[in-house]
Length: 135
Ligand SMILES: [Cu+2]
Image (cartoon, rainbow, N blue to C red; front, side, top):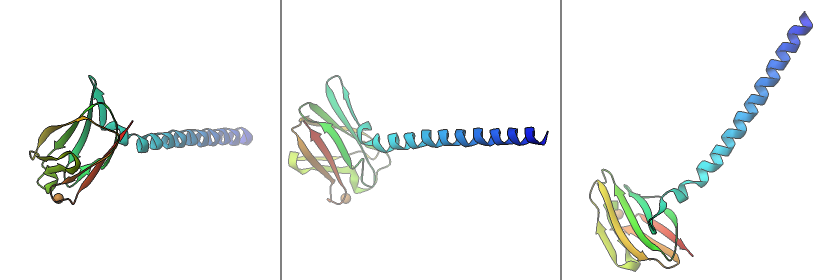
């Protein structure tokens, strides 16, 4: 009787430990996915047009985007209660300067982009962001 009890306790323990490690493995997998995904999530291709979404509020999110070169591209700036200077966006190399609404979505046509990095900043040059166009 005593022996049966300890066998039951032992098998319960083994079950709990293996369940625990399965949960740990699943969590580790999710963590990796979570860390890799955000970079790509703000770039989508819709009807042959590439749309890069960047959120402007106290800086730009994401600060680094990876996009494809050689296709028509729209930079979609999104603001929500943006009262700081990130509401004024500049892309000097393309001679682009836009004042965004405090809340809303503004599409900026970047045309068909060539490969390489494209740098943008706020109107005062304090908040940078970069889009890397890859061929
Ligand atoms: Cu600024």
